[in-house]
Each structure stands twice: as C-alpha cells, then as structure tokens.
Image (cartoon, rainbow, N blue to C red; front, side):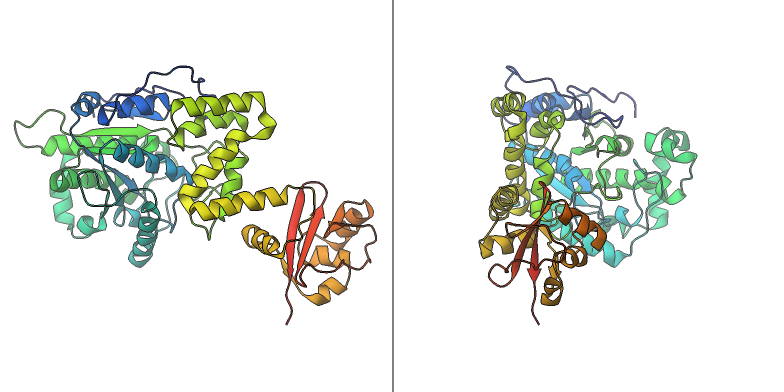
Length: 460
C-alpha cells in the first residue's frame, strides 16, 4: 500500500543476533499527552514503535475512542513472552481509553502465517485449534478488563466468519482486490520464495486482510496492531478496506501500528518453534519460578529495553532503576523488580512471591531445613524423586540415579573433590551413607557453589 510511514522513533533489540541494543538513557523525556492523544508519544519514548500509518496521530488527537485489534495465533495452547509485546500494546490502548479487541485466529490458525518462518507450519485440526483458542482466551483475560463498556475489551475468533466463507465468496469479495505483484512484494513472501511457499500460506495475507475488513465493517474497528513481522499483513488489510470503501468515504478510514520484535538469544524471533528458547505463560510449560528466573537473569544490556516494553512504569522510575544497574550491577535490583512485576501479572501475586522465596532459599548459604520450604522448592524447580533403596546405596548412587550427575563415575569424582554436600553435610566418601532425611522425606543436595537441588524420597 502506498504511503505507509515506517518511522522507528526509538531503539530496541537489534536483529543481528547481538542481543538488545542499549536504549538511550532517559533524562527528562517529555510527558506524553493524556489519553489517546498521548499513545504514540508513549510508544515512542518506550522505544517499541516500529511503524505507524499516516494520519494516525491526527486521529488519536481527536480524543474519540478508537477500537483496535491484535491477532493471536492458536498454534499452541499458550502464549509466550514474545506475545507480551502485543499484549502490553492492548493494555496501554485500554488504559488510555481505547477499546481493545483480542482476535484469536481460529480460522487462519488452521493455515499458518509464513511471516518470519523458514518452513511451512504443521496443519492442526479444527478441534486442536478450538482448544488452543480457548486456552489463549483464558490467558488474555488476566491482562485486559472485559467489563462491558466503551473501553471494555472484547474477544473474537475469525473462524466465526472465515469458516462460513465459501471459495466463490472469497475469490469474489477478497481475492479480486489483490494483484500477484502486490502480494509477491511482501517481505513475508520474498523470504520464502526460494525455499518454497505453498499457495495456502501465500494466501494468508488476504485472509488476515479479510479479518480487518470484517471487524472494520461489523464492529467499527479502525486499527490493527501487531509485531513488525505483521506489517505486510496489516497494510494488506488497509488496502482491502480502502478498495472496498463506499464512494466518497474518507481517504484513510483505518490505521495500523507495528511493534518491534523481541529476539531470542540466538537473534531469531522469540517463537513457539524456537527450540529451547520459548518462555511460556502457561505454568505447566514454564513454571512460575522458571518464568521469574528468566527475568532475573536478564543481561544488563537488555534491562533498559525490557523495563520500557514490559512494564507500565513511568519514565522516572525506569530511569531510577537504570541508574541502579549502572551503580551496582551485581545487585540486579532492576531485574528483580521487573521479574516480580511481570510474574505477578502473568501468574498472580501469590505465585510471584513464592518464586521470590524459592529463589532466595536456593541462593542462600545456609542449608534449608524447613520441610514446607523444601516442598515449595521441589515443586517450583521440578526436583527429582527417588526411593529409600537408592538412598541406602550411598551418595554416589543417589546422585547418578536422580540425574543430578550423568554417571556414578562423575558422582565419585565430584565427591572426591569435596564438591558435594547433602543437608548441609560435606560428603567426601562415595560410599558414605546419606545424612538423615529432613522430616523423613527431603534431601537438599549441593554440587559446587551454584547447583542446588531438593530430592524427595518417596516410600511405598
């Protein structure tokens, strides 16, 4: 579509695999205007805005409520931390008086978006997509206020209209408005042409455009928001709306915003298919403790970006936390405050506080002797389980059989080197008896200075 504005007023994570680019430190940023007129200003100083359409600033300046949607792909039964960028986009929109629409792609999810992918997605059944969509809806309800009203959030599922659209209707009402050269020019298509792109995925942008046009026509949704990899799909929707607008309609009846992408340590987009990189919002996939630790362990260079992107804190507080990182980096003050805030938002205050307590216990020097705390640590970290017979066989056997060491030989080597302690007692003989269990059930095992595990001994 002609005339799209691709301004990037702020910095963020680079796409060269080098991690986050340091955001310019806040000194005295101009305070954004209140309400919707200040939305772009806030996204600007937070360094998260990738692109926006011409005329959007003027539309927001009117102060009139605007409805905007973001689509969520239901190819898994949970969102991950990369999704927090668009989720916070909806939160900020609602806080400023806009109406957020969370669209679950029950229809498009059965096809798959080729954007930022090198291979075609695995096809899911309708039942799988519906189940995933319901799980995602439950997660989104943690972040948005769905109370009915002018700014009350709403859910939508594009299977409700795409599932009823016949092939003839699609070709007549949607396909006719897109030329092959227009579609081939999209980055999401260009990056896949040499490796192969099916017609199914090639058509994806037209279906997402149909979503935007449908929501615009039936719900008055004027804006689509999404990640930078969705910009081509967003502009396709704007093109369809423009082409199907009634004669005499205003020239720019709809708008778009694209956010920068969160990158994995590998430099790739954080996604569900990034092996080993995904940090999920579902506690069954990523425990609240592991989720908390992800944020605590952020590289200092990433902190300025993450504080802006994943909190609602004002500029003054963020500047103060940045100063704390510069003055005492080892204390990780900013990381801990960020970790507590995000974990509480995702998993609830109780789980967040539990993650803090478990973290503190695991890194204290003294052995843990409280059975309740040992049980909490074991549950939070997914600690190993064993039997009394293994315990009776001695320390080396215990370490190997619980998976704390890869072999009995490695266990004996660590024990001989004085690197093993069980329930606070140093073990120096591989055949030595294991110290008495705490409350007849628990063993706290330390390997070296950093590795600490809680083993549960189950009887019967």
